[in-house]
Image (cartoon, rainbow, N blue to C red; front, side, top):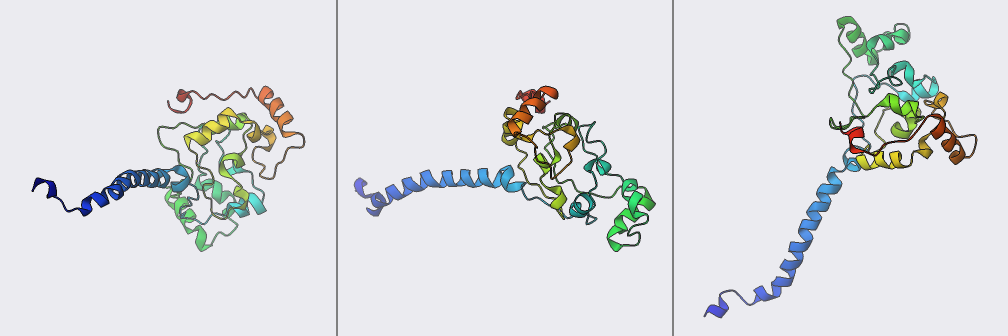
Length: 216
């Protein structure tokens, strides 16, 4: 009687059960890894802003320099979000009564900031210094893409640790003369490798890959 505690079809189901025990965990790990990776969760991220600010118009059509609004980007770790006063330098006269600029006018009247939503937001455990990268000759487009063509800003790179390390190990293709840092249309006028070698020497570019560089 002890030999037949389970029906005979159990023996036929054992290979299928074994396959499921191997495949299902691998599938779940793959889903969690891919679903939680920066390429999936962050690339393409474009939050709805309180004011429909068009980089395509301001940086593209009007040719405004990034540093006019983000005026700390060359000297500080953070690229400052422009204060309302910066917006009103132009919009006190241009589009002063536009409904789109209502949050800006309210901000000016109340003294509180416009509730802009950060698009490129690194985790708190990762340190990034905008000023250091600009001094090294890394252009805005290398990390942020062609902002001059974006109606609404979105994240184009993963900003993951691996992505950062790839650049630190081989920064050559991201280097340009400092006067062209914010020029979205810039292309090298000579052999890119020759230019990169010269700039690395001139700007003393030797990126660290030590953990403490970003995790402080």
